[in-house]
Every structure is written in C-alpha cells, then in structure tokens.
Image (cartoon, rainbow, N blue to C red; front, side, top):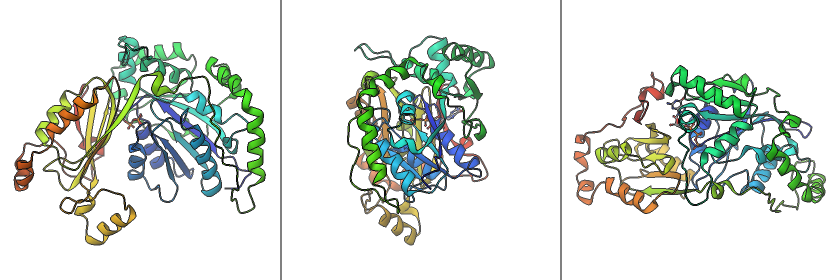
Length: 439
Ligand SMILES: Nc1nc2c(ncn2[C@@H]2O[C@H](COP(=O)(O)OP(=O)(O)OP(=O)(O)O)[C@@H](O)[C@H]2O)c(=O)[nH]1
C-alpha cells in the first residue's frame, strides 16, 4: 500500500453473539471480488475464537497477515495502543485495499471510531467509511419490547442492554440479524424501537448476516459532523483534547522517521490514552474464562448440560471433543437462547502423516497427546455474575470417566445427537445441532 492511499474502513460492532463473525465470513466470501480485504478481529476472551473461525471460513490466514487478532480486552479502551500499533503495521506491511474491523461484543463503537478522526492517530492512515452495528432481532425483542433487561446486576454494574442501546445509537448502518427467530410483527416492533433510539438509521434485515456488501462497504456514509452530535462523542473528543498536541508531535515524528522502505524507527507509541469512560468489562460487570480439557465429553451428558445452559453465561464459543465423534472437531456457539454445534474440520491426528507433521511444525505450542493427538475441548465463557467453579464442576461431570476412557471401542454405541460428518452438498447451517428456543 502506498502512503497516499487511505484504505477505507468499516467497523463492525454489536452485542455478544449478534452475528458479526458470520457477517465477516459472508463478506469475505461474496465481497472479496471487489476488494482485497484485510480484517482485524478483537475478542474479549484470552482465546480469539473469532479469528480462528474467520480463518477456517476463508482464504485469509493469520500467517500471511490477512487476519489479525487482538485478544483479551477491548480495542475501545484497554487495547487502544495495540490497535494503533496494529493499524500502523497493517498499513506499512500488508497489501490490501479495504479494512474491516470486528470489535468485541462488549466494545463501545464511539472510541473506536474516534481513533479514525483524531488527526494524531495511526489511524489517520485510513479513511473511516462506515460504522455498522449488528443486532440480534430476537434478543433485542426480548430486551426492549418484552422489557427483560440483559443481565441485570445487583452490584452497581450497568446491564448489558445499556451497551446494546448505545451500539444502536451510534452506527451508520444497522444490520438487523436473526430475522428467522422473530415473527413479522415482532420484527416491526423491534424496528420501531430502533428508530426511536436512532431516527433515520439505515436498517438492513438479514438472516445469517447475509448482507449485500454494497450496503456496508464503500458507502461513504460515515459523517464526522453527524457523529459529533453524539453526546458521548463530544465528551471523548473534548477529554482527548488535552493530550492531542503531544500526540500530534509524537505521531509526526513517527511519520518523519519512516524511511523509504517503510521501516519504522524508534518511537513506539506507549502512551496510555485514558479517557473518561470506564472499561466496558468493568462497567457492565462482564468477565470471561476459558475451559480447556484433553478428554472427550460423554455425548448424552453434555447434551443434557447444553439443554439447561446457565443464564449467567451471555456468550460461549469454542471447539469440542465429543466421544464417538472422533474424526471431527465440533464448533460450539451459544448466544442468547440458542446454542449451535456444527462440524468444523478434521482433527489433525486423523490426517495423513505429512499433513499431520506440517500441522505440528506450524505450531510448536499446540497441545498434542501421544494417543489422542490434538483432540481437545477449548471453550470461552463470557458472562455477568457467572459461578465459574460450578460451571467447571458440572462440565467436568460430563467428561468421560477413567473407565469410559478405557472402553473406547464402545464410544460409537453411545446415543449421540451431535453431527458426525460434513455433507459438502449442504450448507453448514443445515447440518448443525441446535439446542434452545426458536429451533
Ligand atoms: N438463528 C440464527 N442464528 C444465527 C444467525 N446469524 C448467526 N447466527 C448464529 O449465532 C451465533 C453467533 O454468531 P457470531 O457470528 O459468532 O456472532 P458474533 O457477533 O461474532 O459473536 P461475538 O464475537 O462473540 O460477539 C452463531 O452460532 C451463529 O451461527 C441468524 O440469522 N439466525
């Protein structure tokens, strides 16, 4: 990329599990003919499941810099410096002509957009084109029409529904997703509420986030003046003002010191850009943990567990090893009232020798067991007021016991509701196990 080019940027925000990763994968499948897209994915948990899902669903890969991830925090606050550094690295090192940023489900879009208008930032290398908020129509209906606030807490933290409302207020395009889970009347009620939050917003109705790329890429809809009417925007711009001069000088120095080969010297931007909104995870009482085990789940016990998914978990995602499904890794994604489990791909241990070896060589720190290879369960749980030890204990009870582990010839005889193969002729969503409301 040359320095004069300012690749346009679309920022995707939206609640936990609304369909942002699904949207990104859709864009990379249908939108990549027009643009050479780079993506930057931010996840709350310490494991960036979203980046893996995007990599497995597209030609982009982490190794060639096409997908880049920022994990274990929010790019709207805790990871702002990392965001700036990554934006600069992408601009200097990678070839692309459009950047799509997927913010974490608990990110406030305002401070992210703000990075692209302050003249001092690394993001001045880009042109903010469109801010998009993806909304889960069913969850929105429950929260704002039926008035069941998302995770109300008693300890002073704000309910997550407040963040959802803020995400709706601040966007150029609103993708109203999961329309398959609401009736036409419910959808109209939802749209009415959305328009009271954000009059005149462009609403795109979707299922499986299947949006026409032209509605969210290269729209030129982001309008700094209009955005600056947002009260929170004004607050941030003014609170940012104090260090703007310093930053401008600092940033200027960095630009001067980029030599003709595009290499950077000196000056790493390690200021902490504190601003006066709380870090969203604290503000909304959200926490996350990773559950990792190298032993399979018993299919019936685990299925039963999934049927009574605890309310305190707002979002869970990751991959699973289920006994009797030993060839394929299963992906699990829980959001709101539904949990989906579908086949992701083969465990490396089942691949021909040369492929298995190249998999192992490509990631020395990956888990590998002499007998079971890379099979494992790794799930990220995100929620408010979760009882982590109870969750872990009840999940552990679903794992095979020592005796069951030894009887591996019997695993195929278990009642097993989980998908076991990939039918290439059918879309993945028709091959998933769906647990929960609205099936
Ligand atoms: N029923 C239904 N499920 C959907 C739809 N779109 C996406 N999903 C499912 O909803 C779950 C969450 O989708 P993601 O795309 O991972 O959501 P996300 O916004 O990226 O989630 P976070 O990054 O964790 O905030 C997945 O299981 C998807 O398969 C839809 O239109 N209808």
